[in-house]
Amino acid sequence: MLKTRSEIIEYYSDFKNQIDIECEKKTIQLSLSDNDKKTIEMMRNDFLDLIKLHENLHLEKFETGKCNQYDTNVIDRFCFFIPFLNDDKTSRLRFGTLVLTNQFLTKNTINLVKFFVGLEPKDDFHYKSKDIITACVLSQLILDKQENPLIYLRDQNTNILESLELNEFNLYELDENDFEIIDTLINRRYLKKCFFDLKLNRFENNVFSKLNMIKDLVIEVLKDCEFEPLCFNNLNNLNNLDLSYFNSKKIDSSILFGMHNLKSLRICEARANELGAKCFKYCPNLENIYLAYFRIGNIYANTFDKLENLKCLNMMANEIPYVPKEIFTFMKNLTYLSLSDVFSVPFDATYLNNLENLEILYLFASDTILNLDELNLPKLKHLSISSKKIPNFKLNLKSLHISDLEQLETDSFDQLTSLKGLFLLNKEKLIEKIKHENFSKLAQLKFLNVVFTKTNQIDANYLKEFLCEPCLKYDVLKRNTFYSVSVSQKIKKLSLNIITPFSQLKEMRP
Image 1 (spheres, rainbow, N blue to C red):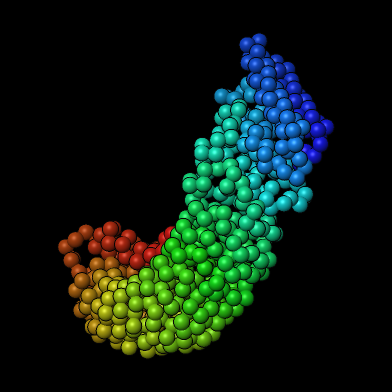
Image 2: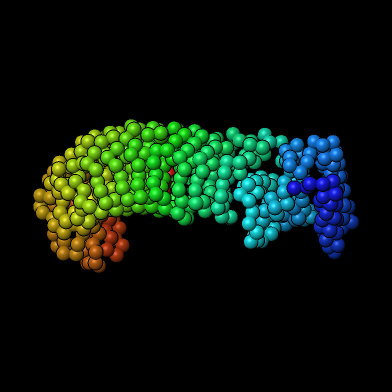
């Protein structure tokens, strides 16, 4: 901050000296013609004239008492210099870039801008979060316009920034005023996405309130932290929230308050002692929840209450120690569910029978899924399970994926006559039981994958006989212990897509 008249004069004097030094470095190059040197000299003079103009305006406001050491907001014209920013052929006569802004910038902010645009190495100085965020915004605007020797950032309406990414510095503290630059420099309505790599111990309430225009927010924490109630308050336009790499005591409804338009929530590679009761009641428009690799200590029967619009839920790899029977009662419209390796205790598959609209279900888990035979989901199209044998369920499935299969009987598929795709991960001893008779009732089968746990000698062409439409051209793939056959390449791609657990949540992939 420039506190005295002499400091203002000194700042602009150093500024002009830097222009002269960089200009001289450029003009002494032997390869430059006289015309080139004149062009450079004209640029120098233009820069110096603009700097002198800003100096006079700054001094005038200081001397009339409109500007003092405590208030720099009245400085609506400011400039700073960045040494040579671009070295391509179109800028060979440039010795630097002059940036014109609508507000005063501290020396620390200017130094950070030079780091973000790649001109200076990162130092060990502990910068304030506000300086870091301000410099990050400025640098992104500058890099978008770096082809110009004079960058004009004074008109807020023309300063377009669609995304803000901050991962070069560790932010250990943060409050809503640190984002003041969002209100004063850029055209707010164009900012849609933010990515932050943070090291916060605590997310204070309303900390992101100045970002209420964004649609997507991605935060990586990488440490233990706590979320204050209302920490995401005022993000009423947010559609997607992504949180990862943190340990916290509790995630509850007060944290998610103020995001009524949230459609997708992703919490991944994290831990929480508890996922609170009615956790998502303030996010009634949620359609996708991705909680994979999110270690949850405790969950309530009504944790997922008030989620009438929820379509997709992925909770794979959680190891939850307790399973409330009513946990899925409030998900009548769910169409996709992944519970692979979710519970560390036995889970009764009949708990899912109220999911009357479920179409895709993943239940990969070793010896923890009970009563698969009693699964009753009338709209289920794809099922992935771990089972030693094919359950005797009555489901109108289009595709089935079974791992750890050890038993295969002649009538194993008699209740699954609607199958079009089948993926079998078999134990070694099962190879001799893969016979045409096993598939005789599967008149609609168009795709078959067979995988063995050890290398075997098998004729992949033999699998053609298991499919329908024998007159069509078949596509056969053999890759080590992986055998695939389908009536067409198109069918294969379609079947493999539905087998992939993340295929219904592509926008939420890790």
